[in-house]
Length: 124
Image (cartoon, rainbow, N blue to C red):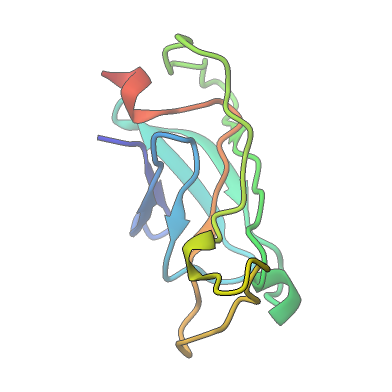
């Protein structure tokens, strides 16, 4: 099971995937998110104060800063993976990248990159 991403109200907004990225839903601009593993909050990331269409058209890289007093507890079996945008290329039709299209009025998912490479396979 991957690390959990929660808001200040302890609502789970997403899970960290094997590649260190997370798709988040239900976030609010300016929120501080915490990533939990081993039963405790280990690091936090802050969302931008506002969400503009330009900002939401791309994947966000949100560094997860270790909380004070929390030693890194994630196994260091492998080197961290680079963060990559999570826009899928399978929607392309002419070989050119497709422009992102909003299909909902709700806040779209935002990827969260974990600089400490907390990967599910490393935690097993």
